[in-house]
Length: 431
Image 1 (cartoon, rainbow, N blue to C red):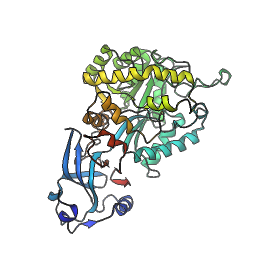
Image 2: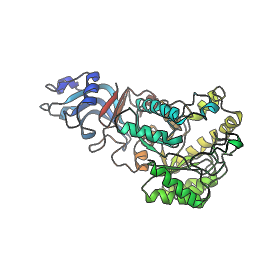
Image 3: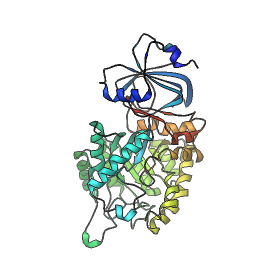
């Protein structure tokens, strides 16, 4: 490959540190940025393209070409990433930014909303530095993550682009309710709703306070008290009411569903994505394929829970539920991939430490995906789920969310665990 300093003679060449400083301080209409590297991944084609030069104006990619084709009479800020492979910023469709896996499990149930918001601010930055420039947060108390999102959008703190659901919707005593408090405290989660119209009201309340996505808890879960992971909780009518209300308002809806009946009823109700998908029979998978429902399977975090859960204070009953679902979920993942289902990257960060999101890529490959499919799940598929046509690709007209790794991730997907460069919206956040 021809070296950038030969083909770009006459351009303004900056060290990466200087590029970061200028990118963060210069107005969007100022000097365009030229980013050069050994290669980039075309996630649509699933191929690594050698020799790349990308022109960025403001927060948008305006040109993707080869280095020799860039005119030398333009005054660019040059970011030289020779030796690296570029990818679009990756996306995680299932995180909980306001919680930390390392904290004592029961003690963390009583964290105040301000404390959870501080956690979310910290974890948003860790997530961005791991290369995840877009996430969907699927549940936090007190609108903590919505506040964090708004702070990111205002330029006050660093973090990924966030879709946040506010309070996940649950039946009384179900997964996503507060079942750890004593009965006399009469404590319940703010997302509890029983009956279709109550569910509609809760969707409206979440939207009122800033939610730009919705989540329902259709079955029991691993980390709740007194629920069985395979048992359906919300009825079809309740799920359908959430879907109808959210879709009228233009929001995408996720369904927490481990059990087979809850998965099927969610698909019938028109849910956009199924989370966890632990017990999927052939009929459920075929239904998802036919309906175009996206599946989000968190197949890495079980390793962390089984290794460190007890030390972190996770009760034995919850660890036993994790043992029940872990292999079944991976088997369902493998079958869904083979069936050609729509798959997105969803890790359930907070069940394992934030910033380790990239570790799931290698497990997705181990359990049935090609490296290209794993990257597509975290880019073009996730963008399609969110209905965003300017995210998930390195392509002219798309937002300038670009990351880099040292090597070719299509040959070694584990490289996604060590992202060395992060740009979001045309701003450089990590060297």
